[in-house]
Amino acid sequence: MERAEETPRAPSTAPSARVSIWESVRACGVWGKEVDKAELRRQVVMPLYARRAVAAAVKAKDEAVGVAAAAERGEEGEVEVEVEAAVTPVVVFVNSRSGGRHGPELKVRLHELISEEQVFDLSVVKPSDFINYGLGCLEKLAEQGDNCAETIRKKLRIMVAGGDGTVGWVLGCLTDLYRLKREPVPPTGIIPLGTGNDLARSFGWGGSFPFGWRSAVKRYLSKAATAPTCRLDSWQAVVMMPDGEIKELPYALKKTEPADCLELCQENGTELPEKASCYKGVFYNYLSIGMDAQVAYGFHHLRDEKPYLAQGPVANKLIYAGYSCTQGWFCTPCTASPQLSVRSLVVLNLYNYGSGRHPWGDLKPDYLEKKGFVEAHSDDGLLEIFGLKEGWHASFVMAELIKAKHIAQAAAIKFEMRGGQWNRAYVQMDGEPWKQPLLQEQSTIIEINKFGSSCRD
Image 1: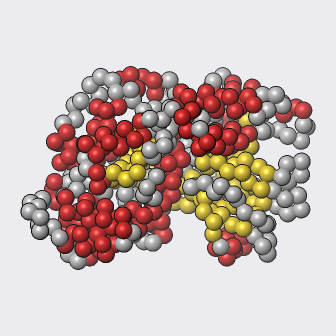
Image 2: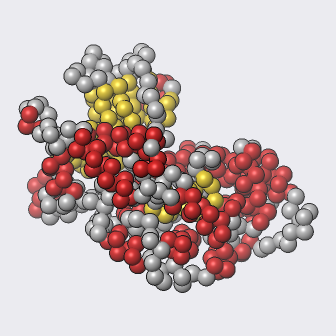
């Protein structure tokens, strides 16, 4: 991975959500037709023996199976291909549940354009399986003197077709490569299939799946192979609860042993309860607590129970709007409870939130100086914290008529929550929500610290 000062800096601002409409219309024309299919394959497709080896290792969850498959090259009349045949190899993860009907269709289209072995359906293959066994197979082959496999491993890039939650899931798994000292970590690009697509918007991949997507997919793949990389801060959230467990655990969060959180507690002066349950997760865009997370939780449950209703971004946004009205966000203003100043608390890393809206806003220098803030960037080691008071306030913020309630910028954050009238809170990280149990007698703690930086195309 290149050093941060040698890579282009991620933009501090992003175009309006309306730009995504133009992007979708533009893609209907010649946007993807300029990429020749044969040239694209030369750019991104691995040699046949290598992609078969990787696919075999992932399927068997065993590096040795992949290495054995690579040793069989030539036995079936295969013609050896020089390593230059893959200028920048690209592997694609597809969330077939995202994008309404487009997820399965996109997978078929990718098979046509590159190869079936380099396309993985996330409903079948977890990102961690590819990292452990697919990349592990390439590393084993490289150790055995396979220069082609070594070059593929060094140049490999990853494309994720999905929404913010899917992208965050893949990036979170890739961070394990740092911990295991298995660098380089492949840069990641995005085909936006989700509802909000704020990660995709922030790095120039567009805010919606193009209308003329069949031709545009070629352009996405070509861009994945050639685009310069930017840096993106990653943040680790540690949830420590005194008892019980989180049910319906999202992909973004993993249960861990309390001993793994002990060092963090000692550093921050936090007392770890004797029967504590601990969870860890990594986010890249935002973490929020409150009403917006409750709405997201309701949407995810409805999508799982009645998938035929969630047929694309427009339908999804209508469902979100419906839940916002039925959950009381518009009916119960904060002024009804003097102790409640905001109903949603958001910790933001990127400029975009809620389908390309900019709740933090473009703040003027004199305001920044007055508040003690600095200009926000996605790689500055700081998080922006803001609040949404209630539904009407959130609506005006999302329409960009007013700014959100600015609270702070911080390099580390600690939230302490207790139950009372409510025995639960709703939390989400990068669009992946969960229901957080709360006790009245003991605190549930969420601590957020910088985890590292990732390369993004």
